[in-house]
Length: 286
Image (cartoon, rainbow, N blue to C red; front, top):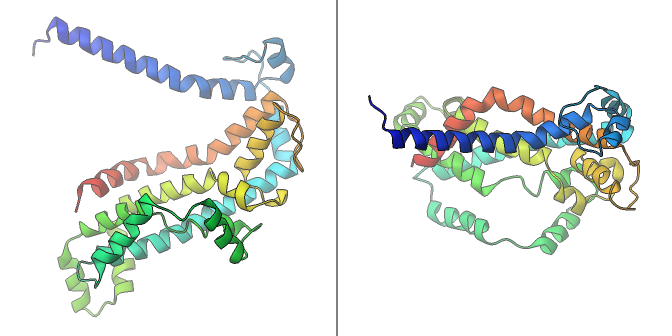
């Protein structure tokens, strides 16, 4: 196949733009990693700007590991992420399965009621009052219960469930299977891509939880990791004083940022193929 000169120029332009975008995207990450591995004296000597460290030091990471506040916040974030994602997935799968059944009475009304929540919500103050009335303030459950089901994630999973052949459900019911058994033994095994996709959404949301923690939690011992990292970065720019947080060096700040990102970065490669497939199927089926 002969490629014209204009096509070659176009391909060259596209490749150049893609390389430029890649460099722009990777540079901030490279900077954060470099500063986290550079001794503080070297950072100061270079005016705080380092791309490739001349000397490597793990002192910042050792300080993070030994810091009780950061260790405690890491445990809080792990608990919220693991337990919260499990609660989210169970409730979302049950709701999505129910709404995916076309013989459900009032299905259209339920769907309309649920979709409206994507356009309108009760507001910040009413939500806070509800959380307060439930006695969830200053508990880790305030980071889990209010967002137990995401309408967007539930609709993705519902669309995927609707693509499963109806004959499988009829066959299972003829064998005496009830709805819960159909869900857990037939629907769930066939919906791994969708479950992985939605699970990743929930997991990332819980791990990056910040605003809810600031809103509902005042006890510094219950702060998740993202709040502690935010306080560390804020303390270097203002005179705000937070409990159990000391003014860190730039290397320790960047090390905290890396530590907060590593768990999600480590998990994503294992579910990437399911994530892509789940997004495509959940978007076009139905």
